[in-house]
Amino acid sequence: MIRPDSVDAAAPVYPPSWYAASQPELAAHAPLRGQARADVAVLGAGYTGLTAALALAEKGYKVTVLEAERIGWGASGRNGGQAIVGYGCEQDTLEALIGDDDARLLFDFSRDGMHMLRQRIARHGIDCDWRDGHASVPIHPRQERALRADIERMAQRYDYPLEWWDRPRLQQELASDRYLGAMYDPASGHLHPLAYAQGLAQAAVAAGVTLHEHSPVTRLQRGAQPALITDHGRVDADFVVLAGNAWLQGIAPELETRMMPVGTYIGATQPLGAERARALIRNDMAVADVNWALDYFRLSRDHRLLFGGQANYSALPPPGLRASMTRRMRRVFPQLADVEMEYVWGGYIDITRNRAPHWGRITPNVYFAQGFSGHGVASTGLAGEVIAAAIAGQAQRLDVFERIPHGVFPGGKALRMPLLVAAMSWYKLRDLLW
Image (cartoon, rainbow, N blue to C red; front, side, top):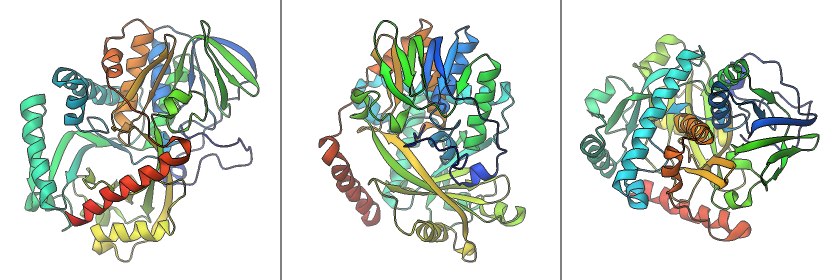
């Protein structure tokens, strides 16, 4: 969830994007007014909060979800749409943090999360344009060597099959000369993010979940009977789930110090027509390069190219965003020199220092999940399922995630963003030089 500074009834239903423009406007759920009681109160109607609410309702719990704006208003309705097995960090990072055995467990959980995502879409009939296939593509020889080593390592240590495509094989599917090959994962894929969020909400409500939009939480009351409090009401509960991710804004300060909001941006071209669009990506897979400041792209259902990247580690949106996104797109596809971006939009993702997922409990009855680090389309649903299982008394999977150590960002509120900008500038320079 990306939480707005205020709720303005005259504001657009969603921030302008191709996702919002391509989806029908749904009737809003009424804001919270007065006092309510639930078994579980959830902050945030994004993927994590909605999946947790749906899973708990199906287990018989009475669940209330509070959303500051609209369903999927933030990252869940604006992201790149690429659903990838794994987490925001590499497996060797998890091995270093928690050991080989737990790292293997977490990867297996991630595979389960992808399977559950596909099952959830099918079981609830969510029309979100799911497509199979994801390619990670190298630009430099060192990146190609690293991807080839990853394929061998993932097969040997994690029993996970990935394919290496050399440049001629890749060019059978992708009409770009920029890349040296591809690590192809047939188990990953892509979807329409906002359609998926709205479908999750409809499934949750059908299962009995109470959902209040335009109900920003201002305070978490802790204790034996926790509560989520808004300006116009409160929900008392036995358990609380915090699924605010990038914008908790004072709700749980101990979580905010271990997470950094980072801006990321996406553009959508004008419609290209079926033939021209399919000529770009013949098998309709999603693609991402492996630079630190990466580009990622895929096709839409109405034959546009959706092209993302341009991460921003400061609090300000980058200047000349539409022009810079267009240049990056044409660097990959020079044949689109006559094509402009019809839509450009952005939002915030939440990253941790080690890019590993940060899920757990801040008290025995207050659960949270954050730190998806740009890798959340599949793992947010896993987080919701893991937290729901823990509330229902099956905490074994959550216990593994809680063993991951997470440090605070240095510098405090005043300096942590400038320090991160400086560090990220080094990684961007490395992308250019090697």
